[in-house]
Image 1 (cartoon, rainbow, N blue to C red):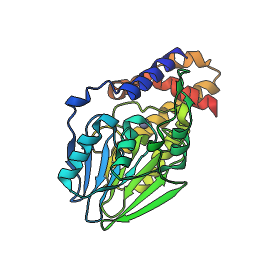
Image 2: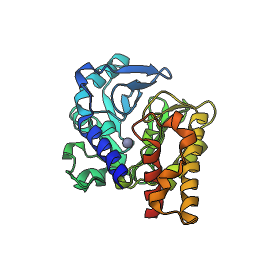
Image 3: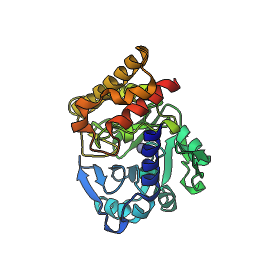
Image 4: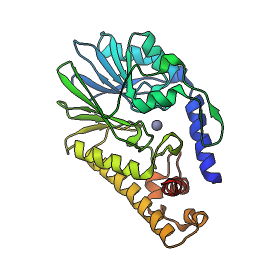
Length: 295
Ligand SMILES: [Zn+2]
């Protein structure tokens, strides 16, 4: 599983260093409604709900960007950041947790995000990853669903079960018809499925099926990474992942050896569109294969 290790190392090092000079990163707000914005910078997309009752933030990129993100949020609304939600545990979405807690925000995530942040883990390259600092641990956690009623908006956090990780939450702004998917849906190419953090390819497809039920053709979708999207964009990625999964499963069923499967060209027809990100077609097939074998 050499290729897989390379992917995992790449992701681990991206998470650790960000490979980014944070001084040059600019935080760029994209207006979605009068009170909902997406912030782009480095790392996962940030969702922002502003209003008289305070600000709610979804994801927060990397720790060195906290002041810039706070500054960008304050230009939208001077109110305090009261709630900071993590869509999942990865450091490019939750790296600012400690800083936000210091600013007075209440950190909110799924039960499994807190569990994983509290423990030393072993990443898939075999190195030990220490627990996150206690100030990064979510203070409010939940199992299936959590509702916020704030700024004349109903915000619903839906737990998605195993997908990108085992702590994925989709955030739905019910009245505005806006959804933040975290990394359950991304636009950088083949998705990364973090098997070491409880992710699974079957869960990934099931999660996107649940997203498709939650949204309609008018829903504005904030992906974990990339530009604003629509239901049709989610459907396309869902169908691609399901197709690759089904072809890998069919090859296994036909008696192909696991080491032969990445060479079968299963992703050839998708590589031009999805292979430009950090997960290449063969790497994606390896992860899908390993996920199916873990069942
Ligand atoms: Zn992630």
